Image (cartoon, rainbow, N blue to C red; front, side, top):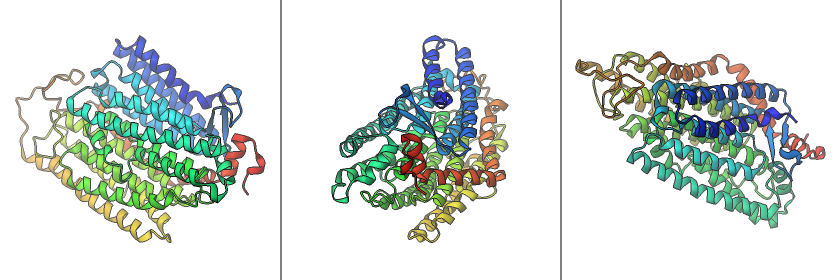
Length: 521
């Protein structure tokens, strides 16, 4: 076995308690440990991606117990790509947090941050449905701590709503797992793929119930209609850098839908007969429409970005709902794009809001010294999120539209994607004009003398100029959108191979269970 496969889970799991109990009173030491650990995670993720690029499915058996009796981690192209995306995003967010001093507003930020990385990486690597639930719970605990970092009544209220929704999802998750185990006698994903196809159609009621419950649970995580309402309130009131990290959390729900429903409940499973996907497409379309309406109607900057995330999840799930290799390739490209686009906008929002004395209302106020720089970054982020050239959102939406071509839902899909892009541009243009253009008509107040950036004072004006290190993470996230365009061909080739490997269920089963006779041609 290759022990590097478990490293993305073990590394942050060991580092988090070390930071919490040993370094919580020394912010410099905690920062150094967190950055070092995240850099190491990035290096490991690169190595695992190179390993997975060979096309094989690598299995790590904990305690050397074979599946389906023991717990296994599974590394393939998809899980390696998601771990690498997580590590890249985490490093960008961590640099921003340190540069702006957000981590200094509580003692346990870096410990919670590492626990969050542990949960995310574990969810992407696990080959067992129950351990997917376990890592979801790790995510919930760590994300709640990060969500209320810095305190405040509004943040606590939004955090409570977030916890209640996720606890409801966790309860449904347990019901689904219990039902699935009662029907099949296993929770290993590869073993489930075999057992579900052996169940006669007239005895498949429990499996159908479990499949729908799992889809609802994953829809909650992915903020899909009709359970999308928790995301805008949560992301809009969370610390902006935390919201940027949360951009990958909704992708955990999308990943779970892809992994479980493509491998276990595929369209060729007689017991399921494509049941979960029948409502996924219209739910995605409504989610995209609601996100667009939210962007148009937003009166604050943070909700504006949060609603754009809802819309991007709708676009992503339109492609995923088709459950074909071609559509999945489009979905994966758009998944990577939307993660960096959302992170860039949240990080930029933090820079803008902190220089408006914490006021994120879309009202005309005096411009900051770097008004032109922030306006240019906002324009780039808005273009990327809306899906206009020259950034990768344009290519990603073209891929999604092409995947929808010649499908029964083509008319609905094309309408909501194209109309959503147009209306998103209008919403972002309105916000940008208020924040950066109309504000130039007002002269800055010469009496404002803000304190040093790393020592923000409650109720005091923040610095007029952001340090280069504080702006660099936003630029890095936007640069990632440019790289997705410049390297679109090799990236698409990798994602196409990833999608084909995901739907080659026999290879996955053979690697995990060692049953070569189950391999498909």
